[in-house]
Length: 423
Ligand code: GLU
Image (cartoon, rainbow, N blue to C red; front, side, top):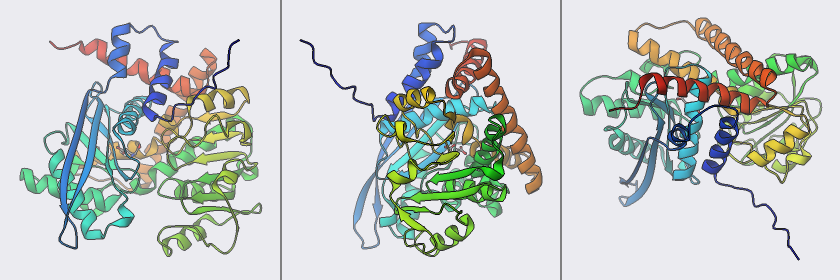
């Protein structure tokens, strides 16, 4: 007698990233050695470091930076502060950055970093000292031509200003190009803070057009109400869509007649950046939020939100991945069978790193563009990325994620082959 062993879903984001890569490799003529080269992160850095807390005591923190690839250019990717940060998470996120930059044809490799911390538990001064010490520890491996950090979960423009300052003071050279996502007055770019959400909006509009869904009839649900989710929500609303649900770590809100995303955001700003208690909508759970009947679901929080456990209940027609890695490979299979179109993370949320690239270019030439110039370049680049991926999906009869991976892996492999392997 055989007993059926239930398939245990990998919760490990790096396992998921490797599975996604393997699916694309299936369609490509890549040698086993080259495939292994793509699978292994180039460089992994771990540091344990002390920070003096406000009460005078020393607390130890652990930080990571993984450079998955430097084939197409300097390593590029954000730094996140979160209690669930782990080496495998950072590995996955760094690999996703490699593919994201390649899909967008940016001259970058991929990297990611993080500190295991809940910054809500720290004072502003403690966050600053932790950031500066981590930045100091990163100096041997980051730089405008080596590896360029940026904001990610729970980090932002102020974090980048501290990293830029620590790097510049330590090396003796003002170096705005060492990080992107800086405040505009420190060499940041206009449009950068909204760029990820704006890119989500641009790709979502194109997916709706492809599916013949008028944006004015589109009902949108957004999970995560930070820098990506909130911006995507109000920009979609400005395009005429109805935002019927939003959620964050504190809970979720529902209004079938439409929420005013900017009003929810103003409320959150006055309530520790949380939407809980917002009076003009019905409170629902985060599980209910994900399975609301809608046209567009925008997961814009963390990894592993859409899994084999809930993919069967999702009632969206398009999933626009504002977050990195929100959908597991098992969930992907279920959604594909159900005919739900996914705009994959490495395309959908690439607006952030795309404007990071524009910021870095401006920093290198000390010449800055207008916000209109930035937004129109971003729209053009997202448009190119979206249609390049859609064409592969149609020509090769694959889903959008596999198509995006095929495009990205081809581009990385082409450069790796032309450059050759040193020595
Ligand atoms: N953290 C963002 C991302 O996941 C932005 C990275 C960047 O701008 O380098 O794409």
